[in-house]
Length: 351
Image 1 (cartoon, one colour):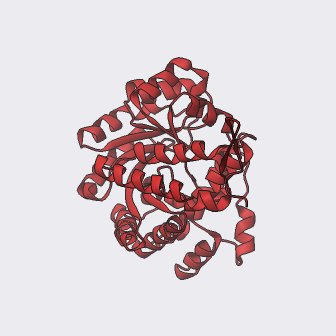
Image 2 (cartoon, rainbow, N blue to C red):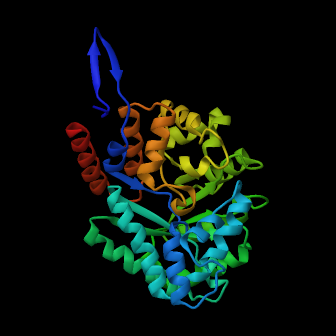
Image 3 (tube, rainbow, N blue to C red):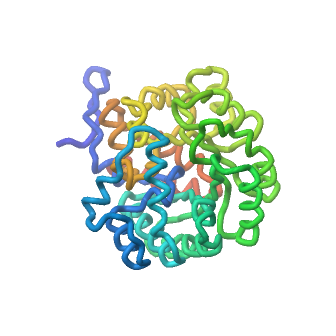
């Protein structure tokens, strides 16, 4: 029997390994997921044919061979051109709904989905086309028993003026998303570049989160800017925070969530930042596990839970705490959080 169980022998608690089945079926929230990063090779080919776009590949295997990179810059050079196949509202709907079906199969009970409107408006796709397609999928996900919401991200390697215009363009659709984020190439694009846009978004009642990617130049300065000046409610990636005990204490006291993505981290750090995640857990930081861009990094959220559990010998209690943290740092009501946490407790009791 491979399920993780505890045996008490003379007061000593022993544990077996956490199984892939346990992490797959564990009730969880996904808070760090780029919808454009769920574009699987088969869907990319399908949309290319439907929209009469020559992508230079004719088979799934040929598409898969293009998904090769070893750092953030080389990843983005593959990631953004792939989006060319997304042209119509139906394309965005299909992209999101395909992900949401996978989320349901991973027992994701609540998901907050990042989307990058500038990556589409900059190539002539209307903002409304993007968000209306994604939002229809969010609504239809209720039939899958998945509670979903959208987070609009600013591309940090675009200008702050572009971010300002994007925020203004988004306001007529404010009922369709719950917050703003910050992603893409962090080099020479610190969070403070977008302080005004974040302030304006907060004034509109939107939640705030920002990427502080792992092992980047001036990582700690960027983390400090996001936390202490811009007042983000969550920090995406951000595990370099362990380099500054004062900031670790700050996020622990404020119960600010950190969203870590082991499989994508593994492309930058050979240890997936697992040691940092464990250190943060030990210091009562609300760190949680997510899948980032799963079509590109080899696994959805259950796979990410299993990867860190297997490689760092996590106990069942630690895995469950990661899932609890995901609900507790989500942007849902306290009542919903209580319902999901109760469901999680019942799952753990039964397994």
